Image (spheres, rainbow, N blue to C red):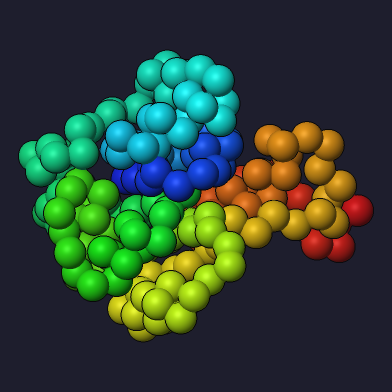
Amino acid sequence: MTKIAIGIGGSSGSIYAKVLLDKLLKLQDQLEAVGVVMSDNAKFNWEYELGDKSYENYPFDFYGKRDFMAPFASGSAQYGVVIVCPCSMGLLGRIANGISDDLTTRAADVALKERRRLILVPRETPYNLIHLNNMKAITEAGGVICPASPSFYSNPKDFEELAATVVDRVIGLAGLELDSYRWGSR
């Protein structure tokens, strides 16, 4: 059983967060706990891009962005995985530089210091040298950068299936078992 913390950042790409939460619902038999924190921009973008507030309907534990009493703000709570999806470049930069000024950055910092899994899903293009250097710093510290770069070889039929090509990789990186398209499985 795994404890996962999800940070939903404020960049465009709310569909990735939605698909991730939907898939985690189906994998609850592998999960001990799922904690979620959303930035204000994440809520705004979800409502703008997806046209609803359905993030309010998930049965996970939601925490405020300044709630440093959330369990995953401490290594002693033993959350094994922190996923930030989508992850803006500003958020990625704060994580890369050890700036723990909110719950998402604190959770990422805890994952790195405890040598646990940190998976960031940046949704930005193009990258500048600062972005690349920040991604390098996170990778060198033990985090994983999994860009929101969808694949097409599974012939996705809609936006959710397209987003799932990224989310399925994230879920695999998190160590969860998921029945999904694999290269060469046709």
